[in-house]
Length: 632
Image 1 (cartoon, helix red, strand yellow):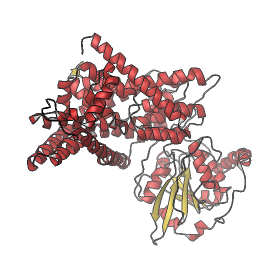
Image 2 (cartoon, one colour):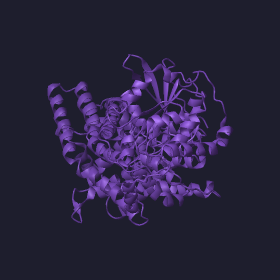
Image 3 (tube, helix red, strand yellow):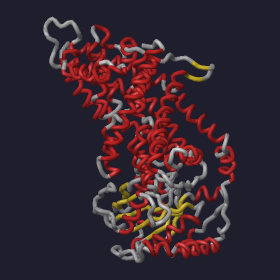
């Protein structure tokens, strides 16, 4: 299997940040480099090494690598292999670090110090950042950094990665030339992997001796986390609480987004009518109003819903709840041949399948990793949300159920549930053929609960806005303009009675595809929108906006898309299209990522084939059932 390689510039002194998962390493990296990288409170968030720049007070520029979290230098998964290769000098296109900063969790020195000792054996200059000291002191754990420095034989400084200025002492240490001269920069590892295993018992004993000398041999439990876990991890209350949390999230996606969505929609319609009034009729007016404004505006309107969804995901990450959810779902996932460790990559896929697929590198079992990759696209990513919101808003009435629940939110929850059930069903089928004789156990760290950091949530939401608007201004805009061109030329012949788009290139393509999609209720307009939607799911909404804007006549052109499709489609067609989007693999970037992660085209081809087959089957059953109930 081929591993993706990240190349960095080979100039400047190189610092590598190394530490266990959940030690606050990435938060410290963000402070040192003023990086906007996402920070999350679960193992495996950093699946590739990330680089930043640190400019010292003396003007010196240092390169800083944030390496994936690891518990040892004997790699068990692909992300731990990245850390191993960089420290051992085996990473292609990257030199060995000039200095290693070992970030240790002050609340769990017993676990963290074993990695520090292993790094020291490599002969690299090393300093220790004693992180999360504020949390340790809140629990009554006081670490004497000077005494720890004497025991380890390396400099030790206090840091607080989530607080501005929490890296000041570390930055000052990096100005000290002595910190960079503990060993020769070109030294090679003094032991191999086999010898590392032999040193495990010695490391345990040395850590025990150090903790005894520091008076920290007794482990201090986090009583508040233990009390919360009695409820959260309860075999009955825990799953019910998890279901309630997820249900409330999807309710909020519709309930909270109404006002900002209405404002964006009104602004888009005003802009379209204003531009139409300023320009004479012709191709330029059509391009701007029917192509760019109708297309891009139809996608941007769903940004509030996407941000609300991401807000809740970030809060759950930051609070430390996600590993508990993985623990709760381990038995369920074990029934389909996976472990709870697959939960976090699959949850990441609700945001986007690409980081979810990459996060599967944290899964040590090759078979489980491959199955997780193959079912990740079935998780309802944020790119599907504009399509769901459009169809739900057009065909599902806005009313409450049982006096408290939004009907539209219930439908959205059901769609997300359908993707999850589909993924579990596929995993169960694969289990019947590939998982014979395998026994799985789940071992993962449950970090202490803590309040989410507003800065990290803001950074995460800001990233999502940039990514979303970047797609609107990039690939979505490009494809929208391309579709406008195909839908506008050639013009209608003399004496034509239909709308001009019916005689365009796009119109002929749509009518040809409609022969294939007619059994599942798709008209030629939907068929046209599915083609550019292969590049990115959101494009389908902008494509429908362009197609119907060009199909409409008179004042109808300025109408919003929802009432247009509500007037032209049956409920059976809308339900069929929703079923299609639950399963269809309409994202070229996801397919390319699967190819990169699996090292060839075999798995992507299998994935695309089975997903299209599932999508067509689900849409056919949905459409025919709806027709049978008189919804056609």
